[in-house]
Image (cartoon, rainbow, N blue to C red; front, side, top):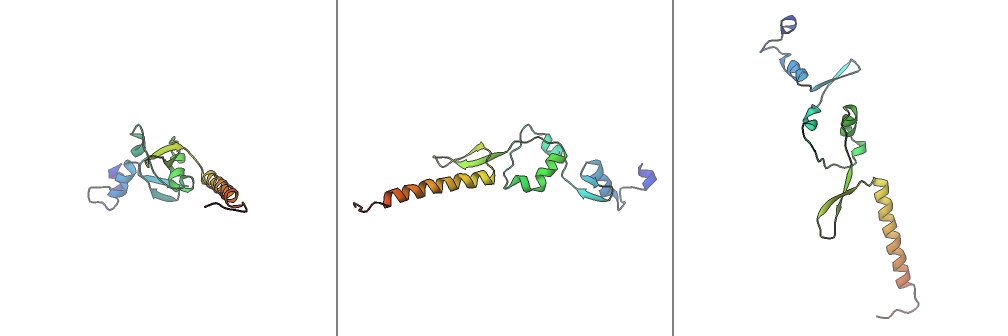
Length: 121
């Protein structure tokens, strides 16, 4: 094939050929070629931990979906000892409602404490 397309060691298209052979190039709709990280870079490990923000809105999520890469999502939370740990995934909406609920509980507690007529100090 190299002889048919004159791809030699010094050819200006040699780098494109190498990228294609390594699986780095992705042809979209027969018109546009994208450079991508080979999916095997993730699949060659038993486990990969990726810390990111708003994963569902990122191109990386769709890259994994496109290539059929299975993944699990977790949230990170600071525990009582000040260490971070993985917990069950909470969406941004769920996290917001949890914080809002906390605010309402604290707010109600504040109202109960300070709504009496007299305060003893």
